[in-house]
Image (tube, rainbow, N blue to C red):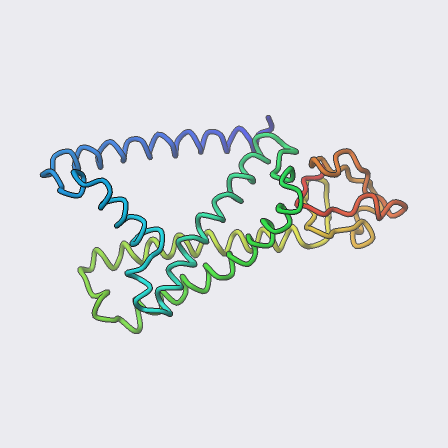
Length: 225
């Protein structure tokens, strides 16, 4: 494991420890409350969960804003799968979800599309909180600050993800860069001077050089060494 992987592992362990610590506090608060009748009626509780959380029915009563919330909610879930893949690629270079075959191309496309949709939805959410200020969202200053903090963090994640993907889509300038789907050696000055080896599953060990453009075209996001 390289230095980047070790640092990431330390951050993951620290984040997991912080999460467990916070969950203990939350569970202790919940257990200190009065019994909820919904817990005694699991079928009704599951029905409400499916209707209000999974289908987002209550939020969709406002069609435009409701769908934007759906983009944020489900977009973040799908993008989390991409985040998991990036973590695995750093901890174990060459690892990817390429085994999904044709579905992997659809997965990569969904990452770019949902990044844009979530970014737009978050920007609208910030605009709505700060400029439009509908009555339904008028709460305490602390609640508004918390909402803006969450939206700001999501926006930061989306912008960095888009910039990272844009960087990967550009020309490779040094070993360690990641070619984008459809990348070929003919578009990279680095490939003319120094061959690169793609370490991902579908094209493991191929040498990127001008003389073998077709053999080193990268159909998937790759890490080159």
